[in-house]
Image (cartoon, rainbow, N blue to C red):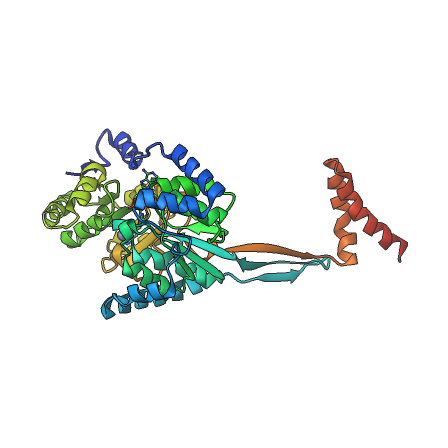
Amino acid sequence: MPQFLSTTDPDFEARFIALLGAKREDSPDVDHIVAEIIADVRARGDQAVIDLTSRFDRLDLTPDTLRFTPAEIAAECALVSDEDRAALELAAARIRAYHSRQMPDDASWTDDTGATLGWRWTPVSAAGLYVPGGLASYPSSVLMNAIPAKVAGVARLAIVVPTPDGVTNPLVLMAAQIAGVDEIYRIGGAQAIAALAYGTQTIPPVDKITGPGNAFVAAAKRRVFGKVGIDMIAGPSEILVIADRDNDPDWIALDLLSQAEHDESAQSLLITDDADFGRAVAAAVDARLQTLERRAIAGASWRDFGAIITVADMDEAVALSDRIAPEHLELCTADADALAGRITHAGAIFIGSWTPEAIGDYIGGPNHVLPTARSARFSSGLSVMDFIKRTTLSRMTPGALAAIGPSAERLAKSESLQAHGLSVRARLDRLNRGS
Ligand SMILES: NC(=O)c1ccc[n+]([C@@H]2O[C@H](COP(=O)([O-])OP(=O)(O)OC[C@H]3O[C@@H](n4cnc5c(N)ncnc54)[C@H](O)[C@@H]3O)[C@@H](O)[C@H]2O)c1
Ligand SMILES: N[C@H](CO)Cc1c[nH]c[nH+]1
Ligand SMILES: [Zn+2]
């Protein structure tokens, strides 16, 4: 059973705060292990990666077999059914179309002093994408990470994916092909992150690393940040559904379970203005849990972190939603469009009862790599912006320098930075001499 809360409960505020702060991640002390792995890869390169892959993934590699060959990729892709391939291609086309619209424009203008100012955007040269191995090896996440990079214009895109016992997920390789990935390495964990960040004899370093992974991967991304850019440290999935009574409880139950089945630490919340509807959804979740393949995971998530909150009206729902700042927010209410306009903090909003969150995970178009753990208050999901950077441009004329240079000189003096001031003064003096 999930928790049942009502804003009329005398202890509501305390229980709501406890719900927001529920510790949903096991954080074993992995940092010292990861520090040693990174140091080993920096010192020994390929051989460290090979030794660690043998130890953790039970796979014996050589420098020549770290990377999938084109023939190996083709053989794996041949195992993918036409139907799966078509679904991946449709998803890729929609994700590409959506992200193409995110590319920002360069800008340039001349102000009233005659100074020309502006900026331009350029892609990172090389990016690395971590794809988790095993059960959590999602082809959809390959598309969601790789396509924005390619739309941004990243010239070299490498994937690392562990293949425990040599087992590969053909759909991951197919997704990588469709997305235009350039290199695929059969390595994982902290050693793969270190190889991407620092490079080895056979793996050239990248500039930016994105993608989810387990605690070792997350700790390694934190440690290499600064040497390379990283996207974010993704936490367990979350969904908040705001629904009124005019919904099918079974639909809402399945939407809640769709994120609960990701992880025992996932969090699924329902806010409704009708307590009876909330109870009907809880019953529907229980019924669905009987037959769900991942019922052990989904059941644990729903029991430990799920909640149904009854509010007096949708004004209260909006206020609570913004305090939760959910990764995914589904709005299944009479005027869902108007409600969406009132939400300030959410990673992704799904508007209306015909928009299950699962559409966004696969095929809608927007990215499914989204801020978790309330970080939607200050951050956004993965986009082309993660793979480009902005360079500012300035061009002075003699007139512009004469107009604004003296103030720069004055500010330099106030900071006791003499050469700064003199570099402006030398030019102003030339102007004053008229030669
Ligand atoms: N948020 C998302 O969108 C999303 C999507 C997919 C997966 N995930 C997450 O990715 C993770 C996948 O985890 P996984 O473990 O299956 O795959 P993984 O690829 O993240 O990790 C596997 C690697 O971990 C390393 N490792 C394992 N045990 C180790 C140890 N004792 N010491 C040092 N290194 C060790 C090994 O190198 C191994 O190759 C899960 O936490 C899942 O929640 C998140
Ligand atoms: N919902 C996950 C992110 O929170 C992404 C995902 C991948 N596959 C299915 N879902
Ligand atoms: Zn999902």
